[in-house]
Length: 282
Image (tube, rainbow, N blue to C red; front, side, top):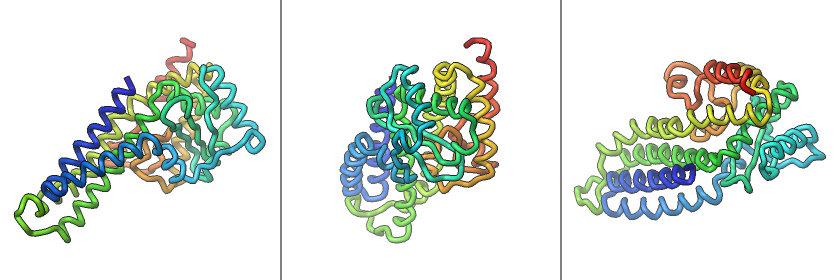
């Protein structure tokens, strides 16, 4: 199922790039966009996990360097029937975590230094179990591809802005840019990026919460962790790229209003309520 989702996302990326390339640059723009799309699809599939890790300066750690974290990941991975994922740590004060990798054999769990400071061992187990559930459900590639697509759409919006300023004035379909299309992309581009992320993120977070509760053996571990993480994320900022915000266990972006309305994550209150309702079922 997630392989189909990944394919659909890549097709969507290609169609968006080609369509907008045509609007902004005619046939020449479509050709350039098509080449760009194939290149981005290749890079996204094979290297997107490395790009995201580098973006947040996540460094691999050994069992000697982080014995408790490594022990938790290894024990829960064994319980989930997964290969031992690579463990990475980000030097970030905000407590947060994400998983990436194109399949379970290449799974990666990354946590911030902040999360290891504020959570108890049981709560950290709940978070790690949640990330392992993403790996087990094989949706980590989907989320990483979605991050690349959201970034591409945002980049197109920026291209449209420059096209408005420096775009050609010729009406020739092969050369001329379309200022109206550029204006539309400037407005719609960022919204489309958020919609792509939201379409992927919300349902997969509920699924990973439930899967993580089963892996850890106690849904309250994750429920209690989410409460702490949500409060801390509102208080401690992170310089996070909005295109990758949906990969984290809680949104690294603070704020309310429209930002909250278009959040890539379900409401924490609803996630906690679902986990607490699972308590009697595990």
